Image (tube, rainbow, N blue to C red):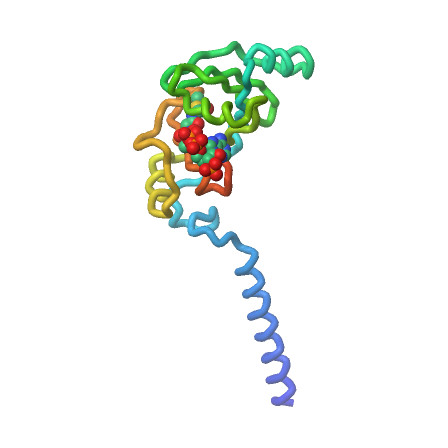
Length: 174
Ligand SMILES: C[C@@H](C(=O)O)C(=O)SCCNC(=O)CCNC(=O)[C@H](O)C(C)(C)COP(=O)(O)OP(=O)(O)OC[C@H]1O[C@@H](n2cnc3c(N)ncnc32)[C@H](O)[C@@H]1OP(=O)(O)O
């Protein structure tokens, strides 16, 4: 009797260990997972997807007149070297970008992609300074020393596309 109870307990222990190992492999491996209280910042919603366009008026007209979206006026942002137009999509936005000035950071992108293309994604964060500190420690290159004020009047930073699997990532203070 005692031997069979022992076998049952041993079997249960083995199953528990297996399921604990499975659980561990399913959890995100990042030390900044939302499940870990030591994380000082977290990602929020997708704010926008940015598309560089060679002709802002034509692109605006596509989204407004052909696709029927609500679009903003074009706004010049000289400190970023871009003109922007926002397209409202309900769950997120598109940001149409066109170069402004000779030193525009999107000029070489447009040179390489003459018909335009997807340029970056922008994700909100709850604490951009904490994000910067943590990402620097993890050797992710941040493309400015300090946050700049972005298109929505809030601090933004950009992360190098070569450190983000080929995607230029903008983080915006929510
Ligand atoms: C208003 C504001 C807002 O929303 O709030 C904005 O949107 S401002 C939006 C405009 N501002 C920004 O983009 C600021 C951050 N961007 C930058 O600092 C720059 O554009 C870089 C991302 C560092 C790229 O610089 P630059 O064009 O001088 O370098 P480059 O052409 O030699 O590119 C270096 C390598 O990165 C790749 N690369 C360049 N731009 C890329 C992009 N958008 N997505 C993915 N990869 C990209 C190139 O193909 C190249 O790879 P290979 O070496 O393999 O060929």
